[in-house]
Image 1: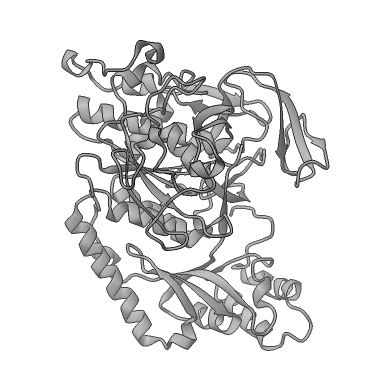
Image 2 (image 1 turned 45 degrees about the vertical axis):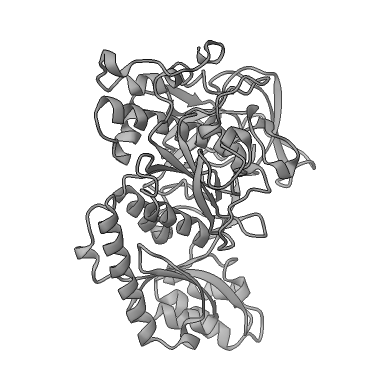
Length: 507
């Protein structure tokens, strides 16, 4: 079972101890309700996460996953729009039947239902939580957690620069699940929404139609994936400048992304996959995360597991940043989900000394105490091409590495600039990988006549990458080599004609 900051409370043996930890004297009925909820074995939550429910009248936000009696009849694929519609209809029937059997007051305040899995987000009291946990219809209950952007020039390092002259990501769309995208940026097809590059999107964080980015993080991510070609200082365009973008803003007013909004964005990508048939959504990027998991966390996050499996059934590959705490044996969620490709970072070049904040749990040999980081620790080190930065989370179950640090990408207008000249961290590594996947899918469509499955994308990127060892922990994983991945597919003279890319930024 994955280790978190505190022990997961769905183990009934810890019920008494954990209730004592979270329950103040005199909480009375809330204590009994929490005991009942935890004893059900369905609740995935830590003592700290249950703290708001400890006092009588306290509430908390949770994701409730129902048992699905129609799962056996579900379509094996979700690529066809007809199969998507059938799946949504069957799922809605399960939810409607459950709600019809339950009184609204007994369920709590529902903030969202999902389309491809019988689940909903709800705010509940301890008594309502206990009632849900004891229902025979409920499979799992998880805290509606929050994921933060994973804040911290890599195209040549990944052997991706030369491939852009042939496979630019044309015919592929990437759903950027982040703080939104500034679709008015001229290097992202702006102004206007939708436009020639940003084909559409939605704000699942605040459930609004406009996914405009005012933070900058999502625009920088989109720029790495599919920013238009340019030759401005060190900006040369995205890894897949011919790919299209869907802007999915998953953050709310707090600047963080609740799990329910992230899962809703993944489902939006499935539903709208073929909105523009010539550029279907084949990739999702999420440069956000949180938590500390020392093994695959599928057992703790069944909602994410189900959502990722549904995306895979639609032929969509999900990339997620590993996180920037410098963990040596753990990753953030949802990078810890088995159905997600987790991405750690490598320096793309030697550019001098760096100093980055890391967690107390990090085993980085250069770790030093400081008052300048919230964690109390930082890691000074010299940068070096293909070296894993001290901040990049590593673990035996990490999937791969990609370029990062001092990336010249795009910025949102709210931050007063067209370009971001210092973007990095695993937040940058993940879209480098996603952009590489877009180019790989473009090549597959041209060379093979069809797109690759998510399993094939993962295999080609990992089996052809250059092995890199994280010196702080001796974890060895492949760093993407896009050219080598593309070369595994047969080519003919007719599909090797170069695109019209200026020589100055082609090689």
